[in-house]
Image 1 (tube, rainbow, N blue to C red):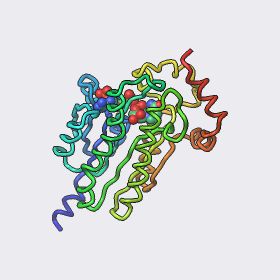
Image 2 (cartoon, protein in one colour):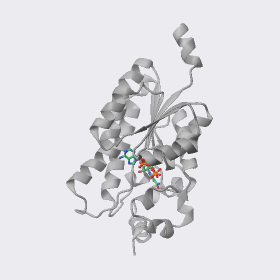
Image 3 (cartoon, rainbow, N blue to C red):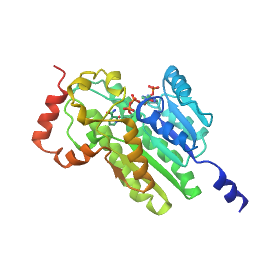
Image 4 (spheres, helix red, strand yellow):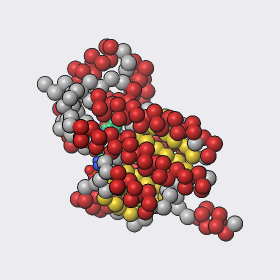
Length: 259
Ligand SMILES: NC(=O)c1ccc[n+]([C@@H]2O[C@H](COP(=O)([O-])OP(=O)(O)OC[C@H]3O[C@@H](n4cnc5c(N)ncnc54)[C@H](OP(=O)(O)O)[C@@H]3O)[C@@H](O)[C@H]2O)c1
């Protein structure tokens, strides 16, 4: 009984991957304003320190690990207490036509945004089940549901983690653990510039971009409602049913062509 009362007064704890910039940083900021205890994971030391300064929140621990490596996930699962909320967000944009990426790169990207996300989640789920509650949010992409020529690896990784999230959402329903997969379209973050896709910032019309704050608001709302999937942004909710059509792929090709 005393344990239950103590737990009621303790703040909730979230683990967020990819927390130094973009969507992950905004998620951290949003939960910090609500008084959550945060375990924040990113890779680059300098950006992690900068995010710590910007967030300026004492109830947060900052960690740097390369999440594309199995040992990082293993270390996190073994050394961080089970969170109430996992936000599996870390990732990068990948550009490359068939055959352009090395075997090593393909394995690495797959682990970073799919295999490692599964290992992270499965490392914590048994303890969430034991605790009797939990929430899991996976940041996938609208690219999981639509053809992405020359970004086929990215699209397939995001489709893989989307399918996984939807499946475990059903599997964990009776354990009081919700799983929500978020499928954003173009979001105004550093991701494209970082991956050498700066041309998209100029070529893709402004109305197709949404802010990371909006992704967080809509995703968190969907997660709290126990929804298994959310497409942030009004425009993407409208265009989603059209994305499988040839005309949509042709428009996408034109928009995303480098020259
Ligand atoms: N931006 C979009 O248009 C868009 C659309 C759909 C889906 N998404 C997805 O949203 C997620 C967040 O992307 P974002 O747009 O917010 O990009 P971002 O601003 O570039 O942030 C990416 C975050 O992931 C971290 N990260 C990348 N590689 C990592 C690694 N190997 N180990 C640990 N952390 C790593 C980065 O940490 P460092 O700073 O340390 O590198 C950073 O904190 C990604 O999964 C992305 O695929 C983005």
